[in-house]
Length: 256
Image 1: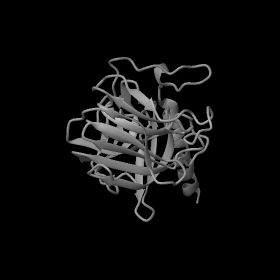
Image 2: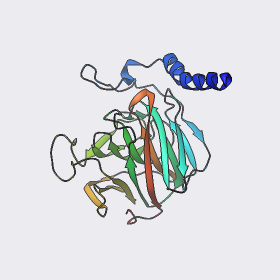
Image 3: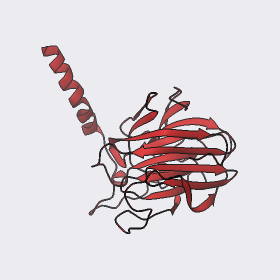
Image 4: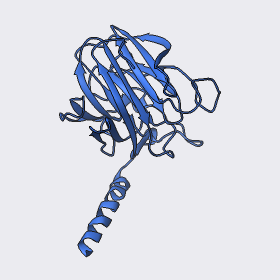
């Protein structure tokens, strides 16, 4: 019994100890009332850590950008839910840090998933994402549909490897307005790739999914990576997103 208690204490304290040893650079700290997050230094990179291990419909899993605390991912075949745990300073600027569950594909793509954040107290800018990337490097060319913890949704893209991300917002933050895209969190998000055209799909409250916003043009060389991911927006603190009822098709027009 004493040994079991000691083991339980060790398992509880180990993450706290490891986090205490992590040195977080100032640029990686999240934005707050007293701090503005800024881009990483232009030459800053961390290696991506990848496991070639199938998970549901996906082929591999990566900690893109090697976040200071390792992520994890799991799949429940009974419920069809993917649980993604990740730290990571952001998916933005000229490099990313997030847990990514992916499949290599070519051609047109439809990808959609329900999104839930189990911890309602998480950082507002944490992101559950659907991502199509040219590579697994932290600065790879990519298109991302993101649902933020506070409700913001956008289609973001990095036009070339190592360049700054840009975005098209499909709504505002949910406390700024009361239009139909700003009442609570979206239930389901989707990304469609048709040739070089990328488009966001949304279902706010369970209604049929529909495209929103203007499409974006971006060429990504094949084969590329297609998958789901999550970033806590906290460089050394993990959080969790659950993405479920995933639809992944190797053709356009199948987001639902």
